[in-house]
Length: 266
Image: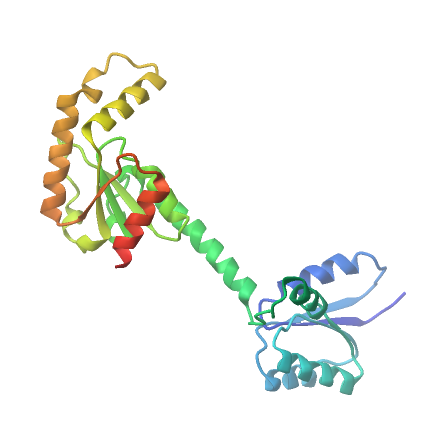
């Protein structure tokens, strides 16, 4: 049996790639004692020197450092100390450079940055769900974008679409009989977007919605008089707030999202 062996992971990012490789490999061996030590976010020769001052014994070095100069220095230190050295990235990167006919970026922590983007997106989706359909007016102050609209103007799908683009979105339903949240008048109107739609199109959408639910007695919801009242009320509110008005008639969710983002970032 092999005893007192050390695997030293040295990475310029989180070191998770090397950790996963180590876990996958060590199950193939009967090892009574194995120390796995991880050094992450290593960016300089001085940090490598400090590592080699600390590590002792019989060591296998796994590296996922991508910077060529730093990698060269690490390799020289391993040779100097007679440590077995394995670069987990160089062969795959070199093969990919040949395959894609371009040089790899070789920037530290790129995969970690992608991970952060993923979690930011998840956070934005959770935000959209928490503050969907006026559930909590506090979201108005916290949101990047606030969507206003009467029923069936695609507030929720728009909120989620924008969330997948990493925007925190709160949407508020507009109903003539209900006073709008006072928070709408306490934030920058540039982040508020009032959704509007043509009367005939909205009538058609609401009729289909009622039919899909098997409801045929709630005629007022899809009547022209009711729709006209709601649209007029919404327009008056939008003008009072001073927000950008977006017409969603015959537009896809993606098209409307692009228009909102364009106005928001301009």
